[in-house]
Length: 529
Image (spheres, rainbow, N blue to C red):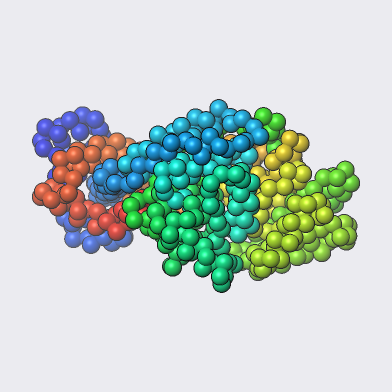
């Protein structure tokens, strides 16, 4: 079966497991017919749709190559030697928290601690809705790394979120012998040089920042743990760049309220361990999500006026007009001009083209209560924490993806007051858009939303760099994948167990398969999660 990787007895057993597989499966049809790659094969079988044998055979070959690549990564991961981080607990005992950890937080911390003490580097996904306490779990993990004599780094996607994390962690670490620093693209001159020197000599224990923390010229003395917040905002290559800053492979913890489809698929294949914060702290209320037509926008503004009159605050997120920051800004500016006529002196505006200090000033005014309404693009998708803001209005919500809607909704519901999210829809909705909005109304569960996102958008490249879109299989249909994957997985496991280096004739045939289906160059990328 497959690429001649099985003995006759093994093949008989495999056929018993999957009797639908034909007995004629022999060495790869791509090589047999002289097709140099799957693109040529796809063109050929499309030209002859009656060649069912070729279609089934190639589907199996592709699924086998994919599973073999996954098996090789698993085997490689088991061989990689990281640095065990067995902290003695003295820093964690010094934390003076004003509240007790939830049962889900305690369980998740135990899972992470169990990983960190192992020599095999941790690769774990921490999923929890906004407000479930992911940052506190990450803090415990980072303190454990620091107790063990290593450094920790927290990567955030935006400067707003990085500075918010920095300020929050500074408060929580007050009185502890932990030197924390921040590094963003805005930091220049002597302050930046001092931070770089502290990282290199080890005097900085914990670094918070944006992509600046893994750029050229940034060196760590002993990076033991990398934490990536809102990981759907980072590409695979960026995550690799951060983990490559360590001499030994660091432990990796990625956090999100909505797993991207690619990572969800990886976790389904077992490449990433998953911890779920499925319990909210006491006092948190579910967000009431409603869908309204944009034709009723006057009613929405009137309701907003009543909300502000009661002392409430609100976000108004403007539509994603095109994949263009300039157009997003134009939409936000138009809404800002309209609303400040209704609420003079009480409306702020933030968008991606604004300079950092300007954005910080507006956000500070909103957080202090000086502004009642914040008009924004998706720049506020992550990290904004204003407990008094209990109303989120998302204009033309059908233009946003499920993950974005869920993240934006998470900007409210951060206190103990009841919060509402209004999804304003246009008049012409596709069935897919209707289904997305209906799901947002029905659930606050990030994993359920991610699963639906996976179904609607595709899995992305499991062994590639695309975060979503077409699945990794180009020749095998979803039905064929379901039918063939168990047998292909068993065959790949048998080959790796017997010939992990792919040195035997059967292993050489498998190497050809990895090349033909373009799995060879992509294997390393899966380590980024």
